[in-house]
Image (cartoon, rainbow, N blue to C red; front, side):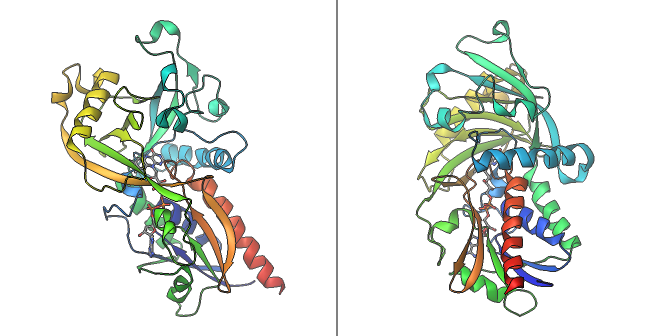
Length: 361
Ligand code: FAD
């Protein structure tokens, strides 16, 4: 096919990264259509709430593992060479307690917590901390260099990169995925729709994927700078609670988390959970308040986001719906940033397959 019209439905990190890769094909005319855009904070829009960092969790041999492998080089390049993207390198420590094996957070972090993980040759400076450096109750720990993304800078930066490449970005709400094909900026029907609707894929007409469900994440964003990113396998406050600290680039504050509450749609922060999060983070990393306790945290805001979970992992596949080719790109759970480029490359390949096949008709 010589020229092609493409609508990307969704402007979260998944939709915008996919639109960016597609926009590099000069013969693709790309429109991004979305209900929510960078700058919005809404419970239906996961991307602004993320930390966001790169802590690999894909199981060996899964598409997710490949997406993470394929994403790291670009995040590393942005942190190194593209200062205005709002991504910076951070020293990272991951602590493991054997008693968290099998818990919700223990399962989520199972690959991350290993002392001989597959990603040790992907991220720089991986090492296992010696037992002598571990606090009581910690069974093992690793450290490496990761990145932390300031989503308030990065998402608008992605929009800017798309605009520069000729993508048209506009608001729109569709009830059925096929409706998106009518919203191409040329006024002509799109040849293909890329469905990047995250959690909304559960109810979007033509998709209605029952395997998609939310995992609620609550955070406290503070001004304190601990000079390190830290995570631990679990907590003693409930198996769906988590403790992690991510310091964002360029004045984005420090994100304290969290929890992984499956099937919980509550949009408002729970004040008691917020207190537990702050207490646990300061315990894990006393440097957060220079040893002065949780009272010395300077709070910017409380937040809640819903991770778009999907049984079986992200759905990146093509499907013909009511005569329209759709490439699905949703279900990136708690790893939408760290799998963004790899997943977008896989979706790009599917778009090329569809358009290539159409060209031969
Ligand atoms: P979303 O960001 O939800 O975007 C969906 C888009 O689709 C929106 O633009 C929406 O308006 C649009 N849309 C949906 N339905 C329609 C419709 N019918 N019509 C028009 N538009 C529609 N990931 C990491 O990699 N690292 C982290 O450190 C990390 N930390 C996280 C911390 C928290 C607290 C949370 C909640 C998530 C975290 N994540 C992290 C996960 C990450 O945020 C998600 O995986 C990612 O944001 C999903 O992006 P998305 O584009 O698929 O969905």
